[in-house]
Amino acid sequence: MTESQHETDLVPKRNSTSIVWTWFGFSPEDKAQTKVICKVCRDAVRTSDGNTTNLFNHVRRQHPNHYADSQTKRRSDTWQPEAAASSKLTQPTVTQSVNKGTPYEKTSKRWREITEAVTYYLVKDMIPIKNVENEGFKRLFKVVDPRYDLPSRKFFSSTAIPRLYSECREKIEREVRTVRFFAAASDMWSSRTSEPYLSLTIHYIHDWKLCSATLQTTYIPEDHTGELIAQGLRDALQCWGLKEENMTCMTIDGGTNMAKALELNNWTCLPCFGYILHLAIEKSVKDPRVTRAVSVCKKVVSAFSFSWKTKQDLSQAQTEMRLPQQKLIRESPSRWRSKLAMIERVSEQEKAISHVLQDEKTKHLMPTWQDTDVMESIKKALCPLRDFTDALSEEEYVSVSYVKAVLHLLKVNLLNLDDEYSELTNKIKTTVLNYLTEKYQDPTTDALLDMASLLDPRFKSQYIDSDKKESVQARAASELESMLDAQAHHQPPSTSWSPEIEEQSLPKKAKKKTLAGFFKTSGAVSSTATMSAPPTLREAIDGELKAYLSTPNANSEMDPLKWWRLNEGNFPRVGQLARKYLCIPATSAPSERVFSTGGNKVTCQRATLKPDKVDKLVFLAKNL
Image (tube, rainbow, N blue to C red; front, side, top):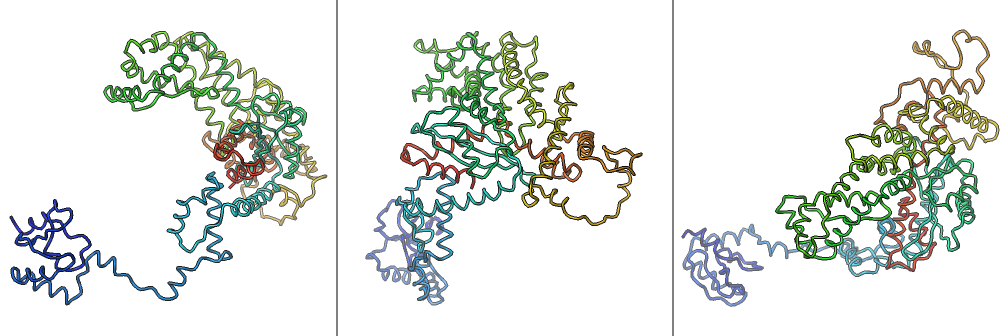
């Protein structure tokens, strides 16, 4: 056996600091490290704990060459064992010692930065404030920065969070004051402690970017009548200095009290597309065959939800049959997509489920071939509709102008009848389409969607009924004329919301005409009338609107707000109308997201939060 093989068989001494241990070690079985063995000759050497004299003597007598190496290394000081290196610390200076033990002043920049970061973490990530008093949280800061003195829970609750709320509110107020038109979304919801709240979010276009803000989460302990909700919404707008006449519309779900509140306030209402689609689908599946198939799926899911043994058997069966390792999905009554997902998962895992439920006691839970056919019919009818709710529920891009396009796509493509489909599939499609068509036949809603589609450069009049195109264009021109007249006669120049209007009020410098300018024509003035009187405001609006509609439609993948940013100079008046309508959300999803945020704030461990605190915490979580 070679010397290197001898060395690898032995374990080095723990926490060794002497160079002599380079040639000695211990047997791997000697956990207590009591018998020292020479790595060179494999002889055992007696030594007391911590004494290396005998070890040096052994090396000097038996291995003189190694002894000479040890003495050379000791004199050169080049050898530094890991334990010795780690224990050999540099002595700090007096200034360093004082600074390390001195806490930050509470007026210092560093203390304020850390405190603000902790406050942001608490409100943005919806962390209970009591966590700052937990031992683990305190230990974290002692390790990260020992000089930081973590404030108490009361400080964050009564000082830090209210200060951050005031700063964030002032920022939102400054921004919304510069906005001329806005849309809103509102709904009622209940916390986990059954306390009712009314949420209000606004949506607007700022610098051709779609923005949103959660303004209030108001506690309403009284009966949720339409009159009370109407007053609460008016008070919320007044509290933020927003004028009712500048609100384009409000998106709500199908609550009768919310609809009555908007009717009492004489506000334009847009029904939530996602909610209407949910009602349409729920109506379409009211069929005994569907009811039975869904009930069978629920029983199957329940059989695997409450027994760890059946879950384990299902996982093993999935492995044997090379099926995806996925759990079954439970249905949520308020989400039609969860019903579809449950049916899809049961169909996908049917072989594994049959293998587990083949016992006589559970065999009756398996879907029959008739149930399987019904589930296939449901999937063929509803799967194409799944993505529309998600796409129309986004807050980052324009969604209201998509409604007309989606309804057209459903009618001519996704929900059209086909002889290849089963009778049940065609029945579901027909019911869904008829319900959607009925709900969007309301004249006010239809007019609102027509205007939004007209102002989207991707669609314009493409999805407007041919017999309505002229009337929609005339209505757009009339609204623009009234809007510009109001700005000219009643609105002070200092409160003008559009940078272009401010530029128009300033004297313009004479600009040399380019060659392309000679070929630029106006839609309102003919070539034979160049020397006549300037066009009236209505003529200018009609010409600009005609020029806008005559341009090629933008690419369907292009952001309409980006298009308007690039082309606003060519159509400044129509651009103002686009700001008014393209900010409308197609669904009430923004309000539902406030529900989720509120639910994460008012948990079982924070059930005693006061309504005022809930309002501030939800406001910060949504707007920071």
